[in-house]
View (cartoon, rainbow, N blue to C red):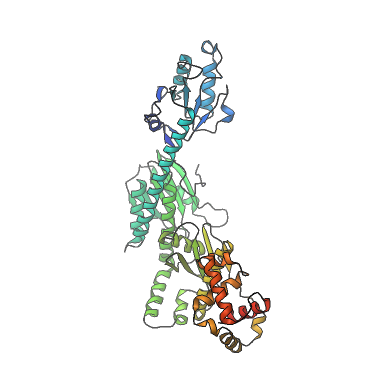
Length: 490
């Protein structure tokens, strides 16, 4: 049956038992059971229970010194029952310590492990169980790092492929190469539009096409991905986010932990590419750009981008600097291909009808809805909202666009008052911006420092300078209110 539940990030790869046996410092020796190089362990667990079944999750290297073994165990069915319970619980292998209870591994245990095809490892006296557990985690950490490096390199190559003149075939070729299999793009009617990679077994193409149908239905509750196997080949299907019925299919001889992440990145890129192909928005954006470069005002070309008004979103990732793939993925999640990646901030122009929602791993600032003539002001609003979100550790902050008391004052008079009141600091933009941020954060030195990316002592110095130039008491709430009014009308 297809499985629509897949990990969002590459899990920690298991450790081959052969890699643990190869560690010279452990001096482990396999004395029974299969020696298949494909045997892997997910963790090491120590237990002296006569029946460890209730305490095993599956995939363990179970370590025991044989404390639980009775003296007459060799003449009965004790070891056979013991090993069968480990196998029933999904244990991957058994490690038997030669000290302090036993000088040798019981022959009946060796026979039971051979009979039940459970790898049996002899642990010498000088090797501790904790040392084995530490070695397992070291090998897992090395495998995890190698897998993350492979995923990162794949993401970069897929992003580069998407920028080529033939982006869809290039992305499919790169994906097929990275997973060592075949990648197929299916159209809305289920037909194969493009493919790349090695030919599959005769029954695989039909099975992959059937799996694509599982994720094609749209609407609440419909799966976005599914997996299956056919003729020993691992299959996966991903619904593309453009909502037009396109599906990405992947067939590979084996499925590494990071393959789902790599395929998901390819699906995001193909979602953007197929969305443009289907709706023609790519050509419309190109036309809008050309007209802007030739001198047309924004209000004139905005109609090519879709009906307004618009929201400006500023976003900053919580972990590392954004890359083109992350920026494209964010745009797709917000429902807009109009994305600008600049330094450590991603800007997205979103139709006002698509209300931005919080995105995992991102901090967002959202402007008020604006017509094209107000885009520069909306851009400033989004930047300030993002700064406030970071300072208050909120995942999303929207610029307030409700009418207030300030709207009762004519805009011309309010602007003239603001210019007069703020004239002493108007020549130093850093002072005005620091004062605005400090007031918006209720006089918090630390939050203002975070929002402006400066030291808290710098904030204190600037606010003291503002107080001196304005010749006013910034601890007075009336003064703060008047300054806040003026700063909002600047």
